[in-house]
Image (cartoon, rainbow, N blue to C red; front, top):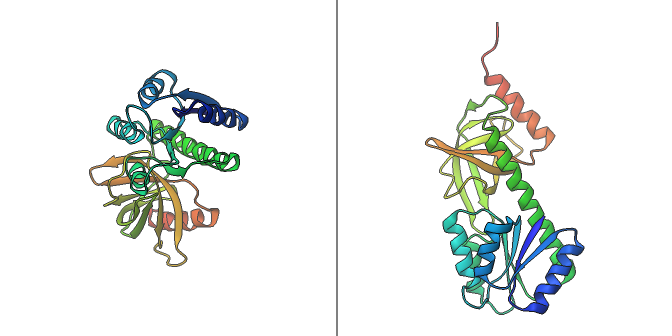
Length: 235
């Protein structure tokens, strides 16, 4: 994983760079947000560690530009002096996490593990989008679905159709393809509740199509049994 470190303090930048390399990743250092924007175009990093307080362009402005450009690289915002409002704003602008400084080596290891999961999820989503095909028939069904987004709370959606691999929802809030949420719903067979990490892979006029990421085998079997029961039976 290529990790862009946006840090204006040379000693901290060197420490982060050494720790990123220690965990088996490739560090790329930028001393300002302006330089980081150039690095995004030149080196295509997989993830970003971003100091919020920077000379010139702030980390918050950097996040705003990424949002406007619809660049989905995962960003972890960091600061030792930012206010609670700044931390909250960084999440609103698209950072996947905010971490207060100082950051211990163990904590940075956990942050890198979290970022790696985000990168793998994004690549999974891109693969699904490239395939652009359904792996199993979907059947029409209307279910109440709870949609939970990181740092954004919960909303409700209504299913349009369902398969063992995914679901299409109406009213799935302001999500963009590649966004990860947790979906919770009761299948037509009743309890227990299914709760599954899901990725938005496509936005259609009639709803948002999600692919399930970590559906358990028992829940897969439940959904497959339901879908199969609704499919036309061959003669």
